[in-house]
Structures are given as C-alpha cells and as structure tokens.
Image (cartoon, rainbow, N blue to C red):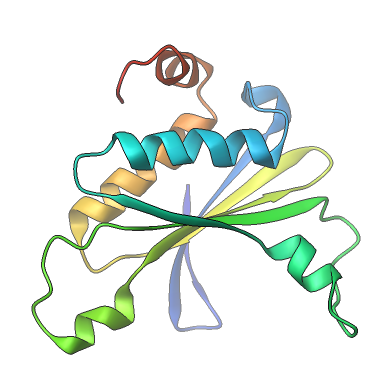
Length: 142
C-alpha cells in the first residue's frame, strides 16, 4: 500500500491489486465484500455505495479515462465521538474502487482516527489476499 499526497494536500492510501491476486472479478463483488466488513465491525455504520462511473458518464460534459471500466465508493462512518462541530468535516469515510483491465485500484483518505485508518487498511489489504477473502466469505471476522 502506498501513502501519497494528492494535489500536495490530501493524504491518500492506495493499493493496486492485480486481478490474479484476488478472488474478486468485479467492482461490485469488492463493494459487497467491503459492505460486509463495514456491517461486521462493531463501530462502523454503512451509508451507501456511490457509482461514480455512472454519475460521470451521465453528465453532458462528463469525462472518464478510457482505461477505467468501473468506479464506485462505499460510504460509511466510524463516528465514535462527536467532540466538536468541526469533527463533521472529516466524516463520513469512503473507500474507492476503480476497475481497470488488469487490476483494481483501491483508495481512501487518511482519517484523523488511528483505529479507522488501521481498520480500513486491513479491509483493503485483505482484498489482495485470497486466504483472508475466503475466510470472510465463510463468515470468519478479520
């Protein structure tokens, strides 16, 4: 997993998963898996899946790079506390999945809460690990 700064200001985690490194064959399968992770976590709450590809494709002036086959985000929240109105600016969280011909590119912004970061990192890393993917599919928590 790579940690970079998008546009020199946004802290982003990115993982490229070659299709042969995962049991998942579509973005929808990964979204369903991540939804199970969110719903199985003791604190996080599922909000929605956003189809960014369909949204952009439906715009009169929308533009999508030709290499992108699908692009969706799962939206959820870890909000354990609400210490100030400003805390709302960092919520909710999302994990984006972009499908290319040969791989999936999975991204999320760094959260101010270490538990949220480590949890999202473990969910994302497990997408490329067939053994962990199969355990979650069988009902074992990661």
